[in-house]
Length: 394
Image (cartoon, rainbow, N blue to C red):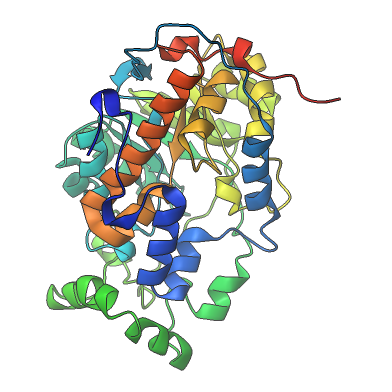
């Protein structure tokens, strides 16, 4: 049950917060798959650093202000959104739930927030766009750049309003746990992970068997047919993501080709943010890939103020990585962000309940965000400003 204004959401699926969703997803998914969706890289220092940065920020609430009607709505890329959140691109949604990308897109549309389609999705961009709502498209560059540009054209024709180019993965990250579990690309069946898969019968029946009945395992859907490969084997003519030769000149050419809103994802430095705006970006996403790329990268919340100071008046600044509570969203806004992108939390919900589970994850974050606004004396998002920031101890 939900109170007026979204102030209270009960524990659907027995989950009262994102950590509950996290634990429920861990129980339902095979360990190798859960690790792929949940974990970082190497020693997972960046994952821990992201969370610690949010915990370290304190707020100084204003009191005796009228918060009988708290309005969490805002504008993201100039268009109204129910609250300052968009769903981040995630490549494993189609294995967490059958046609998971479509379920996430429908959940985002129902919640009134944007959904970002990953170029690594196992569903065609056109099929996901059929969900309606606000759609953004995230681009990794394939080694054959013409394949990437063809997908960009498809995304625009299908109705995606924004293009997000991910720039923080020039070389493959060192995710040792994937190699141990066999959950790499392509996925390798081993005695250990076969036992793991078969010990999760609900997931196996609801995801794997459904794909098998439909003709087999999902593929990288947004590639031409001759380049597609199933997650369990390599294609005869493989196409691979390759960003080690991507430069600012390449990004400028993509910007010239794209007529909608344009963002760069993976910015941590103020000078890089400034350069992004200079070549025509409408915004940047302060991101360290959720701690899944460079393990010694700075926490995104720590990098946010510098980026805001560099470009805040010229472009929109989003932040992701480490967001688990509505209070984390409020802290990001107080520090100058336009909004946040959240990836893991909706995936946890998706894994246990499809669209309904993803909607519950979004509802939990929105409910917490509205409550924090009220407790801080903010009736509107614009009142979440630097005046609420508690001085850091010297």
